Length: 268
Image 1 (cartoon, rainbow, N blue to C red):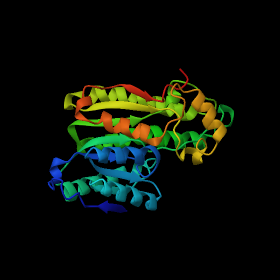
Image 2: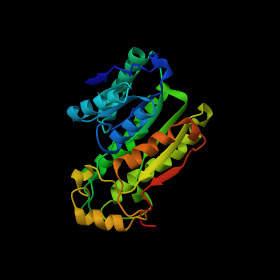
Image 3: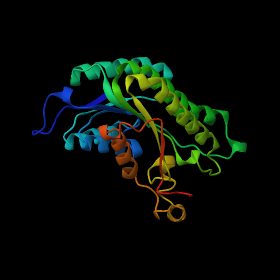
């Protein structure tokens, strides 16, 4: 299913070919939503995916429209690789119909879930789910989308501060994100001839609904983690979204194959 906004602010150029287009996975909530809105605020049109909250996706579409940009929300479960061929055909069609284009300019691999448990109780099912969503999903979705990614495009892969510091219970999750960081470097090497830069953003703790808002809803945990961060607080979604948008701007085109941690100085 698609949710589409086609309006644009009256004082903007109506030639859609003049606008950059971004695709953000998991754009209906949390860091993905913040990235969508930050990109839109910088004049980027948006394609984004959502898993099962069509109502939340519709809210984001409306918010992008308020910023004067175009937004299209498409349902996608990034753990289901078998659906990627159909999804890329939908992307191709949306680009043609709404932008008269065959490609897009920015890919943000953000979609994810949080599962934590000690090594001794981690199940194979949970391990496989984390792998399918956080590692296999971005790898093969990016592969499927490469023919539709413009030369000189930007790819941002979302990782985590947990690949630098260790917190009990996150071994499987952090392993997958570590793989994403390696993937980033290889993508940058292999796509460099097309002028495509690829970077990793690694957030620290951010106050979202991740893991059912485990951090957001626990004042003691928030206080402790804030005390372990140089800037004295945990992150907010906009702290990350604005960095993602900034990394996709032309003035940052020479940053490539880097892991950029955005944790406010956590556990340093």
